[in-house]
Image 1 (spheres, rainbow, N blue to C red):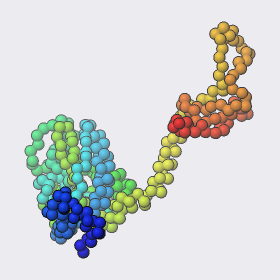
Image 2 (image 1 turned 90 degrees about the vertical axis):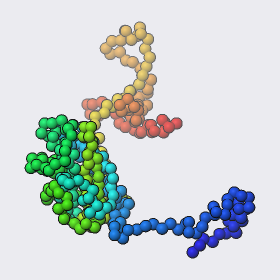
Image 3 (image 1 turned 180 degrees about the vertical axis):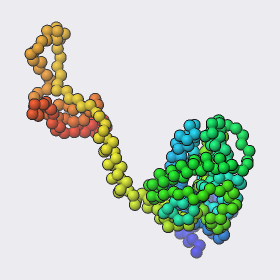
Image 4 (image 1 turned 60 degrees about the horizontal axis):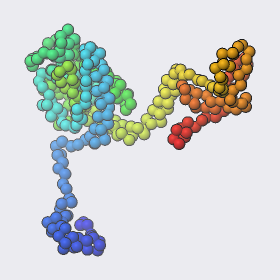
Length: 331
């Protein structure tokens, strides 16, 4: 139905036309307001923006985790950064990667089905070169992988995939398990060509060169846990437990911190002549009265008022009140 204008809106429009502020061509038409969005039924969008956003959050954390892992493995500074998270079909993923490549097939219960972890030849050859004592700075020609290449990269990928457990820990408790390793992606028939997948792409900076790592997660693997990939649900479900756990950890960490407590009983002014004449047993009157509270300082800052006294055979103080330090500073 077309939008009905009020009389005041009609008068304002006629006034603008007569004054020349707008021309008839500039008057918005109904068809201008109706924008048609194309939809490809051959490639349905199974993942919502919330799902992809949550996957990006999870694997952004994963990128930092494996940066530290790879740095420790190759004894060199490695930077891993998430580049994109998008939905494509499995066929598009297979055609987008090189042949040969290292394609590690693994499961991650409670997710269903198989997930693919792809490391391109540049990453494989460079990592293998460094682990075998090289510099990792050479030019690598595309060739078939040897058994030595595959055994070395299988160990590296095993560590990379196991770190997914840490990245997913806040959303879901998963257990990655490697199934197989393949070098020809065209022969991998783990899912239908039109199956929607979430493709997470990482860039890996190693020395002066850059390579890529891809994780391909089928929609069928995530179908049963899609509700946990909505950010609002994620935080609502875990908010109470996470808050209590974080508070407990904070208390435990704070309990081992040592701080200095200082109390000044009072002050006085003495001439230098009287100071030089002081001896054992002399009494020095202070500015504070016995009944007056003293200030208790934590790391040279006053936080409490206290009362000095004796506890058994020890001298001590009893806290009376806070100084409300924040209000004093605000004023």
